[in-house]
Image 1 (cartoon, one colour):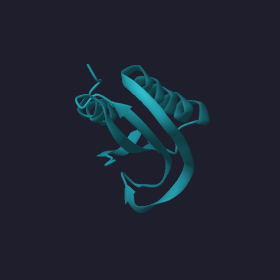
Image 2 (cartoon, one colour; image 1 turned 120 degrees about the vertical axis):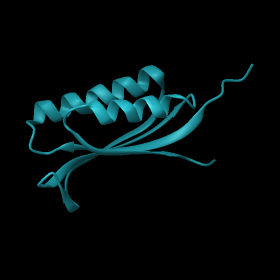
Image 3 (tube, rainbow, N blue to C red; image 1 turned 45 degrees about the horizontal axis):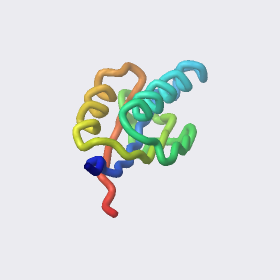
Length: 98
């Protein structure tokens, strides 16, 4: 029976005012979570960038792009965890088309 998986991309922005160790810990937490629930295709840390508009009085964020495959129900759980994790300013998950 074939595995039912989908391809997804996510970008999340980590609070750039955190220490480098704290930023790395948040990035590692999510890459490990994705790896446990699917297969990571690519991780591309974009680093600190100026945001288009201020979010919570912050003008910079640490951007991370991750491309992955997982079961269709995992992105909803990932989005929930992004929302409750301190240090994550914004996130988006998009399903890729083949």
